[in-house]
Structure formats: C-alpha cells, structure tokens
Image (cartoon, rainbow, N blue to C red; front, side, top):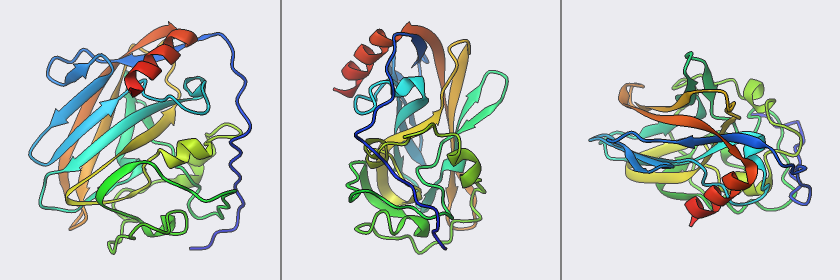
Length: 242
C-alpha cells in the first residue's frame, strides 16, 4: 500500500471555544446501564462497555465537533474477531448511520510530526497491515481483513474539521485490528457530532470472525440525547474520566 499524502497533527493549535449548548448522551437502559453515561453488554461471545462524556483532554471543546465514545471490547469467544470502523455505528432514530471516523486516510501518505505514543489499552490485539508504520511496536495481524467489512476511508476521513484529529485524540483511540480469543481492547472512537435535536442514538457493533467472516455477536446500546450547556458537559466529562 502506497502512502503519498502528508498529514500534519498540530497539538499546539486549538479550536476556538465558545459558550454554547451541545448534545449529551445518557442511558437509562435497566439491563445495560451502570451509570447514566456508562453501559455494559455481556454475552458469551463478547463483553462490551460504552462510556459517553468520557473525553477530558485536548481539545477541550471536542464535543462541539464530534461525538467521542470510550469503548471496551473483550473477546470471550473461541474465534479471532475483527475490530473495524465499518462494524461500529451510531444509528439515529430514523435509521441513518454515523460510522466511526477513521484516524487516518488509509491509502494515502501519513506523516506524523512526532512519535506516536498510543495510550489505548490492549491485550492479545494485533493491528491491521496499513497501521504498521504508525504503530511500529505493535504486532501486525496475519489475517486478511480487507473483505471483512468494506469501508470507505477517504469518504469518512474528509468529515474531520481542520486540525482534527489531534495527536491526543489519535493516541487515545483504537486502531483497526484483530482481537484474539481472550483478548481485549479499550479506547476512544469518534463519530460525527450528534445533533441535540435527536431523541436518541444507538451504538451498534457487529463482531465478525476472521475465520469465514461469520457473525459472532451483535451489540446495541441506546443513548438518549439531551441538550446541555457546554460548561455542564465539561464537568460531566471530567467526572466520567475519573
């Protein structure tokens, strides 16, 4: 795969903060809710935790631009499962999909201003081949993943605003890869900003085996959308991140 397009991440530049209202995601699902901003789905195949309002880093006003979710996936099956952005969506009430936004425009050239020091958590997790140059200390999966879930990287990468994603966002995000049996991965995913006039959105994840592309599990977590003041949202994020 060739890389030809330079991409710069400037953490010294910030987005202009302003006093406004934005969307906050909360859940009151009695079977899945752990707190108003955290839900868990437990099954024999995967254990998935989804936290909203968890971002507490640069940029401070990230919720004005995208919807970040902190996601943990544990593979409890006997199959290696694929972790790809095309498998994770926020589904609006009318059925429209908001796929997870890619960290890089795969197929184009990526130039980092300084060494990437990922802080997402993982165990028995291997990145896919296109991420090898960005994560040189990580093992590359031997499985072919291109046909598991088709995904248009360029289309969704161009939805990022200028100066996003920041280096802090990339280091805390989960790259695409394969979770081996007994493995886990935890970090941020970013979606197009949810409008505060939405009634609810549903996070969905379809786990697929690397052996035959069979569906191993399907997870859905519903979040209600509330309009809140930006300062209140920052306070909720700081508390959730503790």
